[in-house]
Length: 411
View 1: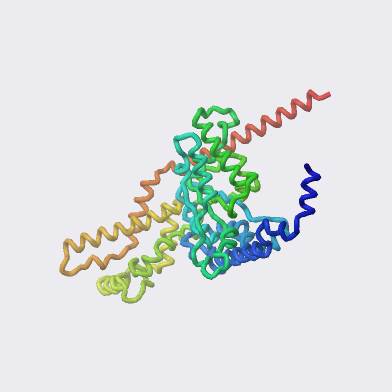
View 2: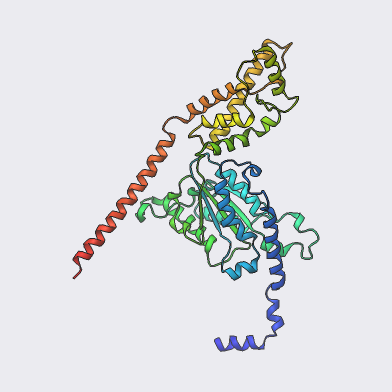
């Protein structure tokens, strides 16, 4: 049979052999064009936190840009000569409320400028019927969204070549729901029937990310989880979720100030925050001028916008990005409540459109958010992390002891 196959290949016209595959020139041109578009999408200030509406994550953005975006934007020929390829998976992990979902959505638009990203939550994939969860997962990978019409217009092949080379980004929130370690902790296999069904989903995910059959288009999965320790180790190896980046809560005053400025930028531009550098002819400037006429000139001067944000950030140690966003909403609600009350009692001389957020509103908002957080929220996470570290140390110590016993017993 091998000889017959060799004879058949010898008899075939080389032109016939070439026609069975897409012309290399067209494929290479499409891949190069996609790389150029990705490079344009991530150029200049695209990875700047302020441009993305994300504060306090400059280090995270820099690492993702270097390890994920740069290979996608590099010339394909250069990647071949370096012997590398773009990563297939990015895992963003960290405490709740630190901006993982927002970050993933913004990154997806930069990494996949030619087609819409697919956003799915882990529990949405799971189904009570046998085999349906695996089918839902296959549908996500096998049926990517079509590229935008803009990239099809004027193309001789209606954009087919570009569509085959355009990256498909899949954002999986609550990733641990479908990617938990198989067989129970330590391979004990004590999860019952539900665990067996979930193991099958993990197997399907492994096959799609790095299986024998190639996917129809290049695909990258961005997984989001609060606890990386729950993810199956096979998914975390190089070649799958090779890039794993922690999205931490803001730890410095500068990081918290950056987040606050993202969430209060519109408020300040509209002149709704009482600061010394309020925009001209804004409600905040009018209130400032009125206060200067009515009060003693020796009163403490107003802070600038940046000074106010820094003062608030100094009072918010331990706040996550979501907590800081909630703080700005709470401060606005206090200001709005005061404006409504003033309008109800002095409707003839006061308009509800004169609503301005004061420093006292932010102070009350800080207390509101602190009451919602509680004192033990971060302590519980720290205790769990400490327990994991202690358990790892115990396992390592046990292994070292076993090795020592084996060495002593050796002749």
